[in-house]
Amino acid sequence: MNPQAKLIFTISLLLGTAITISSNHWIMAWAGLEINTLAILPLISKSHHPRAIEAATKYFLVQATASTLLLFSSMTNAWYTGQWDITQLTHPISCLILTSAIAMKLGLVPFHFWFPEVLQGAPLTTGLLLATVMKFPPITLFFLTSHSLNPALLTCMAILSAALGGWMGLNQTQIRKILAFSSIAHLGWMTIIISFDPKLTLLNFYIYSLMTAATFLALNSIKALKLTTLMTTWTKTPSLNAMLFLTLLSLAGLPPLTGFLPKWLIIQELTKQSMAPAATVISLLSLLGLFFYLRLAYCTTITLPPHTTNHMKQWHTNKPTHITIAILTTLSTMLLPISPLIYPLS
Image (tube, rainbow, N blue to C red; front, side, top):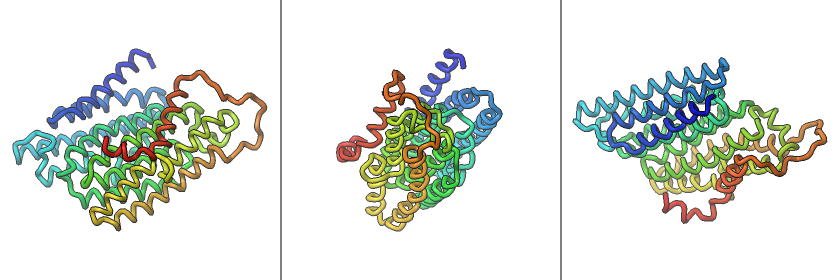
């Protein structure tokens, strides 16, 4: 792709995100989401492969439908209450339509079918944008309207997302699809707590973005798209694979690592809100995700290829992305001890 075109699309992405997260008016938020959608489409389809074109088409149709529902929800609310302010969403029908629209934008169950297919058709760097940056504006709208939305509906959607995200990721061999179902399961954790402590949702999203960025950049560096490819990378870049191993365990939410922090705080808050059964169910469902993260980690570091070639191991490289991966992996694995500092900052 032309560097100038790529720069324009990147600036448009940042602009659309900034417009949505800083707006008070529904029309401005909608305009920011539309700019985001139009800017990411060329990045999805830049390889001109039929699967990439199909992914871009699916993404466009789903996001256009979600934007239409969001606009319809805000217009219905304005018709009944005369308010265009995002925080003044009070009409119950508008709240229900908005929940559907944002669930469609994010890929929450039952509107999750498009996300694994789109991520599978996109390059790894674009997949990183789809899994993190493109989810930030809808999460912000969720945050601003959380007091108006139905907690029972959100809890049901969250538990279903955690269940399906874990269950459907078990049988996958494509790494991008595994990470897509992982994203759906993490969105379940973010959604279940948003009615009770919206700041915890944002904290969970930030930590999830850190861990996902480290994973995608490491996979992009070793050019691994399938589990079979991942099995042969240990002999080439052992240090990078070891870092990827730790990041995957952090994504699974194992206790000594950063990924345990949001799960711990969410379970604690749900227990305070007398929702111990929901906390128990979603904790048990995270074990499904733990299985495929362990399988990825096993393929990354423990499995060796049957015929290793004699060549120098790439311990030292001059790629600037490796510095970024090192920083992100450090943050993805070692933030748990300073959790008393992180939570008040959020």
